[in-house]
Image (cartoon, rainbow, N blue to C red; front, side, top):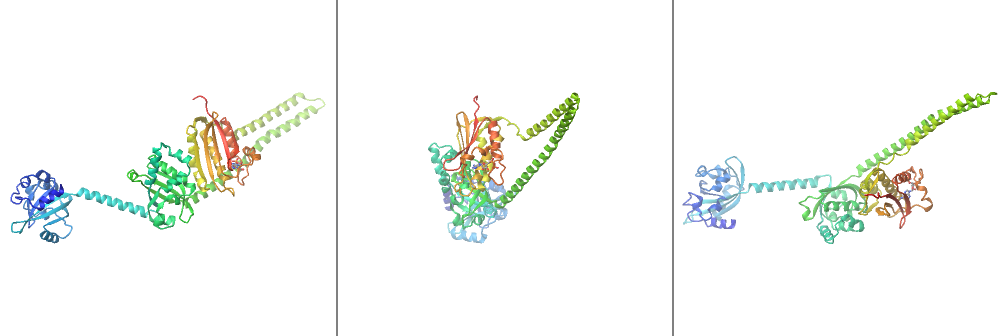
Length: 543
Ligand code: ADP
């Protein structure tokens, strides 16, 4: 349509200059259509001779106020090139096109896409200039905003002290869609059954852009970094990668976790990994990833934790010392009284005429003091035995899942890969959630520590849970050195430890917690080496 209009203007419709009274009369067929555009005609001295309703609307000036005025002065027109050049072009070529800026009656600036055509008389002498203009202010402003926000984005992308990657996962999206088409809806379960699938997903995710900081952090050129991401993800971080894909698939807006990354030279570092999935990027299979090196922060945190642990240990030792002193003091008094009264009663009985009443009174005091000592002992016992579990409904699956973030740091630090294999139908049991989590953490940390032993090449930790014979069976299986059969019974005794800094309390506490829940805990050798700590928790029979 614009094209058609252009042609009609170029050929200059008859009567246009002779009959400028109204636009509708000037160009009858195109009248209403042209009113949407701002059409003006000027003589060679730029005086306005025609002004249509489109012009009135755009510039806010009625026809009467515009006619006979110098158009460029009236509208404060600013041209992209000097007006002389424009006019020269108009004379030689008969037309000109460009963007001009003008000021409307109320003082606002508008950007107008203007097309000018020169009309000549029969002898070929120039007569007047016809302009068709279109308001493109809004479009220009939108373009400018986009340009600015792109500029800001590039600035942030390049200048931040964060490694940024733009990832293209369109290939992975196809694979995931195929899985869905095959009826595989639960990605987590699929990953649990096919651990190799995480690597496959990594190979299908490509780095398509990186910023300067990424080059420093990963130690390479831009070209080195572009391509599949699996090179940068050590095995111990596979779970984080998988979780980030699950987050995207389940339409979370972003995902954040700590993970280890591998530089191009093979060395690893701790990082905070963030991933955002802007809705407008997802359809084209793009996502933005940020990686912040937190090695120094973690080192400081570790030092702090170590100091805290040492402090807690020292506090425990001194508490034990203080307790022993006060127990000795408290119990010593009744013991001394018992001895004194015993001696006294012997004296009363040893007389030639034994004083039985006095002897009886002394013996009664011995009994009272004995009772006092016994009370003190039971008070101390009550203080040291743990409080009874607070029973509530505990969903077993969620309880196990909630523990994993608590040990994630420990896993990453020791390069251990965690695999959760939870049956989908895990029930809700009656128990103390915090105490049960304590059991799991104890078993998992023990497993991680066991796999630290020299000679352990594969460090896999599996937590499995299912229902068997009316009870939940939870298994914590490692690939460590395992437990010799002859020692399997002793592990659960208090103070049994083979660690230089161990307390030997962990498993004994686990045992008392599991038994207080009506369950049983034991250790078996795991298939292919390592140990499998297993415990049961009864499932309530009534729903
Ligand atoms: P601590 O960890 O302080 O030694 P625990 O009661 O938790 O106390 O563990 C007692 C002992 O049981 C440990 O010192 C270790 O010898 C053994 N043990 C526990 N878990 C494992 C395991 N997963 N593999 C091999 N040995 C283990």
